[in-house]
Amino acid sequence: MRTLFVTGTDTGVGKTYVSCLLLKALSQAGVRALPFKPVAAGAEQGADGHWYNEDGQALQQACAEPLPYTLINPVTLPDPLSPHLAAARVGRTVTTAELLDAVEAFHPWQPQLLLVEGAGGWRVPLNEHETLADLAKALLADRRAGGVVLVVGMRLGCLNHALLTAEAIRADGLPLLGWVANCIDPEMNALADNIATLEARLGAPRLATLAYGATAADFDLRPLLGAAIISPEIGKP
Image: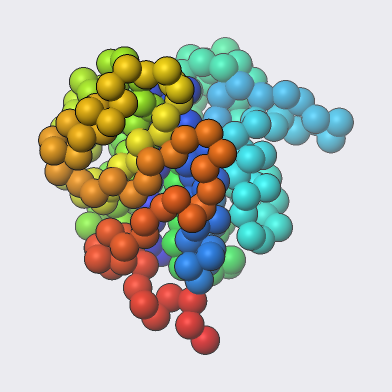
């Protein structure tokens, strides 16, 4: 299945917010896209005994189909830490192989596109030897299968973080299909100049600039169409 891997310049830059809006934009474009949050750290235990992460729940609510929570977020860890530390706290190890097995559960649902939201930034450790980027590389081993969307939290320091992240994505051999300027600091100085700098240097199209109250209509999906992630035939009977 085609895959969009949504990563961010850091934690707290709005990956879930962007992923939810992107899910809705794809749905409105006729694309049957399903969300996948492979690992989430920071959760509350429900009355049923399961752990629930608010990002996973937001993706579940944004999805046009009633997917079970455990399909969307198969690994939920209680403490809000890096995945490798949160997993160690409960005496377990999370691996790329385990998360790839969880992707297999989506096949009966026959999605046209799997939207995968990472955790933290591009190189967040998954265990002692792997990072979440290793999952992205495995999912996107065939470059025709999709690519990466980068969420840039627009605040002081974002230029360095965004450019380094884009460099790391490409160093891993993966295509950066586009980026989103998420305006998380409403008082950011020289916002337009920072966005212009990123447009000139990131080497990928800007899919949206999101201010507070943004909607799915703010996304420009044409770069994904051009990259054959979505096609004119998707959504047609």
